[in-house]
Image 1 (cartoon, rainbow, N blue to C red):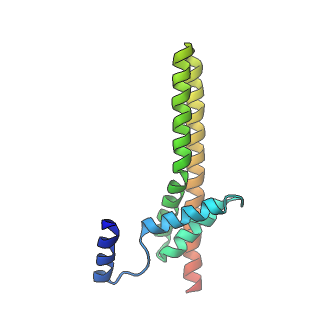
Image 2 (image 1 turned 90 degrees about the horizontal axis):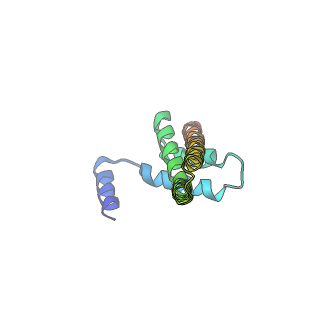
Image 3 (image 1 turned 180 degrees about the vertical axis):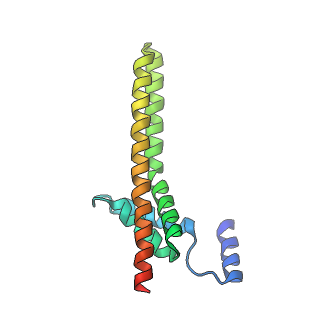
Amino acid sequence: MIYRTRWHRRRAESGEAGPDTTTNAVIGAVVTVVTSFVPFSPVLGGAVAGYLGRADGSTGVRVGAYSGLVTAIPVIVLFAFLIGGAAVVGAEIGVGLGAVAIALVLMFALLVTVLTVVGLSALGGYLGVELSERSA
């Protein structure tokens, strides 16, 4: 609440228009989740975030990547529990090497998943900025 109040005060003083990066990233993440049944939905979410930002291409990529990170938070939490569970189960049954292998495979899968979502969202952010520039 305090953050939003300070941001609105800074916006009024500087004359800056449009919502902030965090708001755009969250909106883009919500669009990604809502359209998750569509292939390449992170591109759509990033495009919405970039379009709302109405800035240059690098800012669109940044807000799109933030949107992908916000979208990936539940996946990161899920994989953290899975990796922790593999470590605990491996320690309990005394199969340390198998548990380590499973944990490494899960960490690699997490890395690939997060990079894919963030990369596609960043691409969408760039495309959203390009779309906003063409429509203006």
